[in-house]
Image 1: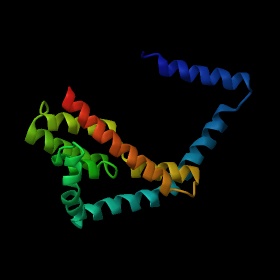
Image 2: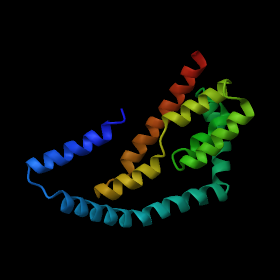
Image 3: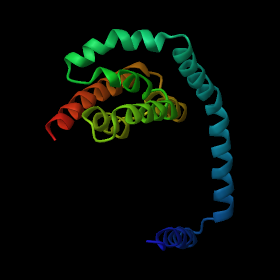
Amino acid sequence: MKYVIPAIFIAVLLIAALKRVNVFSAFTKGAGDAVQFILSLLPLLACTFIMCELFERSSLSQMLASFLSPVFNFLGVPPQLTKLILIKPFSGSGSLAYLTQILCEYGADSYIGRCACVLYGSSETVFYVSVVYFAASKQKKRLIPIIIILCATLISTVVSCLLCRIM
C-alpha cells in the first residue's frame, strides 16, 4: 500500500516521457491555474462562511429548528437532531460540534446517537461543495441542483433514521 503513490508518480513520468511532454512546464502551468482558481474561489467562500455565521447568530437557525422539529418528528427523525440536520449543509465543523454535543448528552449507543452519527457521516456540506463546483464549472443554473441535493439529503435522513430504528 505504501508504494501506490510512488508508483503513480513514476507512471505519470513514464507516460509523459513517452508522449514527449515537458513535465516541469506542465506542472508549473497547472500550479498557476490552481492559484487562479483559488483566487476566484475566495470571495464565494467568504460569502458562504459569512452567511453561515449570520444564520447562526441571528437566531434564525433556532427559530427554523423549532419550526421544523415537529415535521422531522412526524417523518421519524428525532427532533433532537434538527439543528444537526440544519447546520450540516452549511458547515462541517459546526455540525461536528452539534454531533459531539448530541453524543455527550445521549451517548453513542443510543438511538439518537446512532442516528446522529449516520446523518453526520452520510450527508455533505452542500453549500460549500456547491461553491467549489460552481466556481470551477461556470454553471449558470445553480438553484435546481442545490434543491435536488437538499431533497436527496432529506430523503436519506429519513431513511437512515428508519434503518437505525430497525437495527
